[in-house]
Length: 275
Image (cartoon, rainbow, N blue to C red; front, side, top):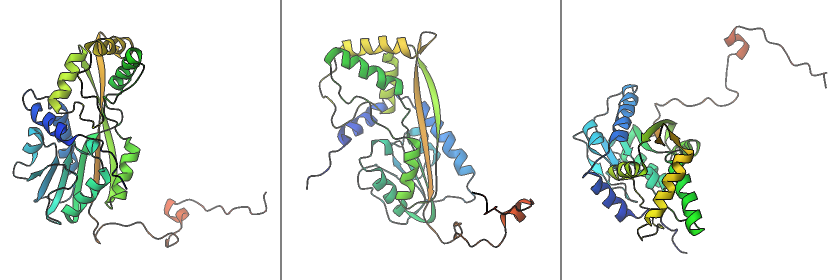
């Protein structure tokens, strides 16, 4: 049996993340920190043993400066059951096996420990994806992988249940960013460490005509007041390591109070004689 092909060139991704520090663009990471802090503020427990997984940029490291940080490799380097909080940051959209990453994160948690993940969702860079595809089709009559495929929020929420996390919640936030030109957009992607690290990407430098034509198409379809509009979707995944203290749904048929009584309304029986 042959192994499934890899989605991501991990060496290229690591290089891109390292290069991002030279001219960083952390504004989306800063937005993620604000959202993470809000979610942690709603949790009725204090987390004292956090673990950071993935692309832990300076804004994210500042959230828990003493927390250990591990790479989001296929096999996470953690001590089982040693943490009460795992924050997986900007790595799940690059994972060959996102369910595997979630399962391992669950195993790193103690019972009733909290998992919190943030990743890019399917609406991210939808405009750039469309324009690059159309430009390349016009020039070469073919397509090559240039923008990472990303999951829909409804599908991503299901991954939490498949990984065995309790009380799963998936929600998202879309942000619209305006750019004067395509070069500035690409520079920001480079500053996030999110440029093309797909394993099946073309290794040759793209012809500059591709980007000239892509920007022309972009301005025709996705521009406002002479600015290019780019969508970024941050998806937040929340779940808990299972524990007996957590609420569970009741067994069907086990209720001891009628719904009509609970709502304070009269109960109307079904007319079984009507067709």
